Length: 154
Image (cartoon, rainbow, N blue to C red; front, side, top):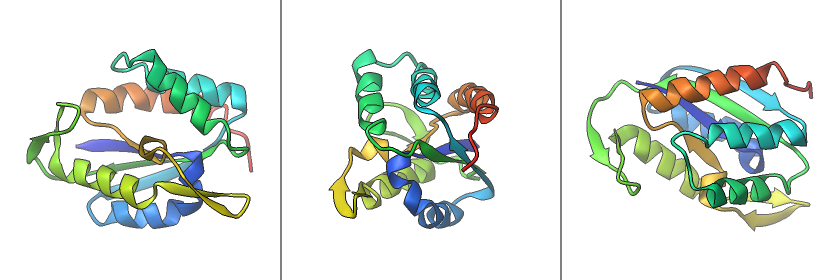
């Protein structure tokens, strides 16, 4: 199954370490940094979390938390996991076990950032995002392709 992972801006500084963790279970790994201005960053988050229709307050909270950082640079990682063993996760979704374990491990290990040289804990869902199924992958891939065209160098 194909996956899209997003290393959000607070944990972007750990992207190389996070990608090494992905390499342990994934294959055919590609990554691309994306640097959006604040307006497009907010639009990107709103579109990304419109599937499945999320509770608006969750998206608003994510936007509020992620836009407080001056850098809006994120890393998009695409990869495959060749495994079919599925489990029911905390959100009552049927997911591939290895993918869920990878997401949980990254979120728990990288649940902090450094802001002005000071370690600051972050909400775990704002460290790393991972698609759960093929439908979500296809939906989010289209959004990412759209925003790659708006990427700022740097």
